[in-house]
Length: 143
Image 1 (cartoon, rainbow, N blue to C red):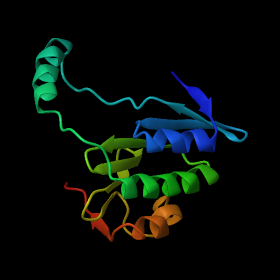
Image 2 (spheres, one colour):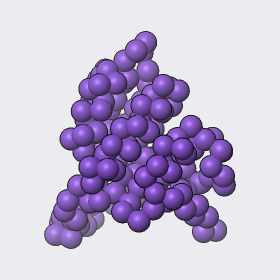
Image 3 (spheres, rainbow, N blue to C red):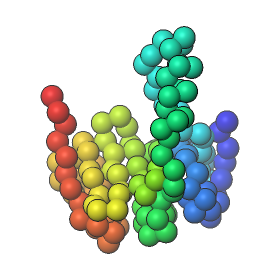
């Protein structure tokens, strides 16, 4: 369910490693919602598949440095009123702009998908912040 939060509340959500999606802006407040995924399997197969996934679900959360960099990136994106999703995993954070454009911070580097240079699109807003964490590695889409 969508709700309005301030930037400070959004930073607290990041520090708690809670997934969220920025869906809109209203004045100084940010409208966030839960991250919704895409399911491409039949409903009757969902229960069987989810049962297996739960057994293999990775444990853990991002490192404090990853959370700090994510907070800095989110501040920059909110200042520019960009819509995006943040998904936390074990020792990684994914900041997704759309299906084909995202960055993933892991413990070795920052993987960049869908952008061809550090100055392109939304990456141009946050590249300098991401480079404080680890080097940017540009991945090409497989066709």
